[in-house]
Length: 140
Image (cartoon, rainbow, N blue to C red; front, side, top):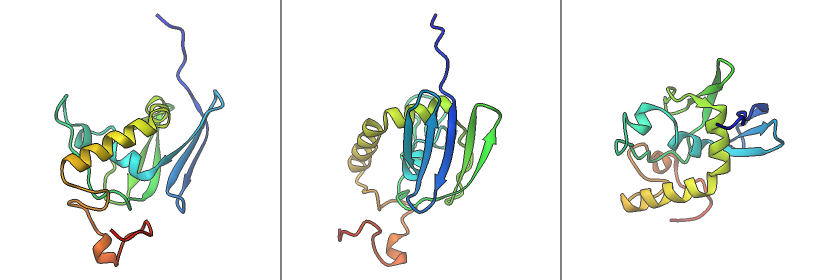
């Protein structure tokens, strides 16, 4: 058994304009986690289901905001998302994993969206059309 200790954050900032959470850990690593990534990979039953194969693909989360963060003991935080989602508890270990594996997780998410016939702007929570366009500066 390893004596490895879990990473502990030394800095935690919610950057509303750039829509990322910046977390720096005691091993010197800093991650910039997009709100959308955190929302679509929320460690909640609503997203993960109650077992393997029960995951629910999250769609239309490109514009999601974090309206607040609640501390959870000494081991994590619970973000309050603008779409009403507030049940995911992000442990420090999970935030570290999200940061470390961010590229692969994004790619997996985009592949799942495409396979289901969605884009990052489409889905049951899509609001960009009502707001008058796309936020990325490209016409689709």
